[in-house]
Amino acid sequence: MVWLGPGCLVFRPPELFVLGSGCDAAFRPVHIANVGSLRSAPLDDYWTHVYAAVGVRDNRGSVESLLDGQRLRPYYNTHCFAVNPGLGLMNEWLGCFRLLVTDEAFQSGPCRDDLHRIFLHQAVLSALVNKSVDPGRFRILPPEYSYPLHFHDKLTGARRARTMNDITVAAYEDDSDLAALPADEPMRSWLTRYGPGPA
Image 1: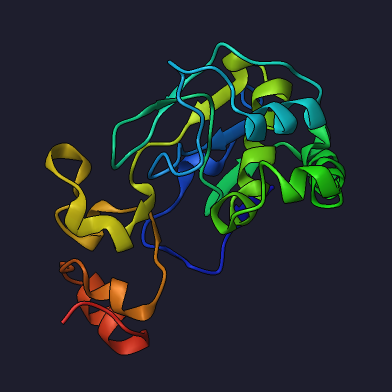
Image 2 (image 1 turned 60 degrees about the horizontal axis):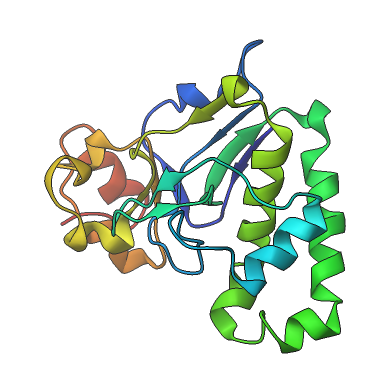
């Protein structure tokens, strides 16, 4: 099963979403640390509750956020991903998410601010994926998947795309983000004809 959020645009065949027989999930780490849990720090109350809801205490894994380079406990972006539906992850996610949304003490405590509430779905899914998917059957997607056009100007070096043609799946927040990068032909003409795009 492949999930694409409404703010995604596919520029090239997303071949890494094809999991095959040797993979159960493919995700991209988050763009920025945000509400993520630093690997070097103990779990805070927010993540302790998230982990308890999915049935774990902690984990040994880590990822690096794209923009700010923070080493975090597994925390994945949810603009686009692929999972083996046979694992039942999405049903389990819904149950855990509902449990935390209806937990009044959690909502008025560790999850009382907007950021923690907005990204709760992402935290729960990340914890579940890390718990349920064998590391040998998990694929970290490269930066050209869920490439953040809204953060393009802040990216540097190899993390910064040269043109739209370098991106497989772009994530954007509004149409103006689609002008962040130039595009080579024939993509330039396609974007000009079918929607907002680079000038």
